[in-house]
Image (tube, rainbow, N blue to C red):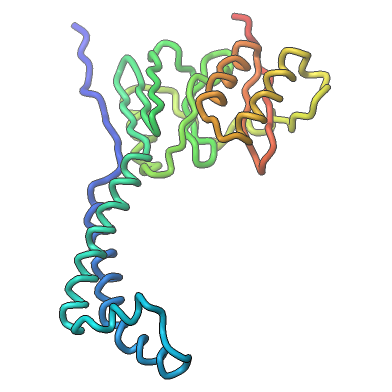
Length: 231
């Protein structure tokens, strides 16, 4: 009888909610205490002070500290929610991997995965032909937790960072490694990046993978890696 372990789900830690809230509270409290002395310094140093500062100075110091502290705590929670929404949610199961981030969601069956590794800030999965199956930013999650999740579920984790890095070359139109169809797709991808159209970029990435090209961006330039489509 085959047994399977429960999926491992990694997401932005809730501990950050407290850290953001406490940090916002501390900043807000500090601002509340600073408003009156800073306001007096501005008034004494310059001819008058900005309207918002005058308004803040009209509030009793005690109430001002309470208000700014509460506003700081709320701002910290809002920042946490924004960070949580934009961070990767990674599910590693015995039979599949699921990655969700920024409205993107990808399901990768276990049998297709031949390698899992870090590519700097990114988490990358490839198949036996070195074709990229998924690439997601993963800096918001613990590197150790990610590695342990894949190892615990029997995935082929590579210790080497960016093992295919030397295979990438900077793309310029007309390179012998490419052809008209690939150059056309890379030009369109460059325009989509400039126009900030991430969905178009994602579609063009898929089109290029079908043509045997993996592409990534480095220092404002497109770098490509040719892989074998056979097999």
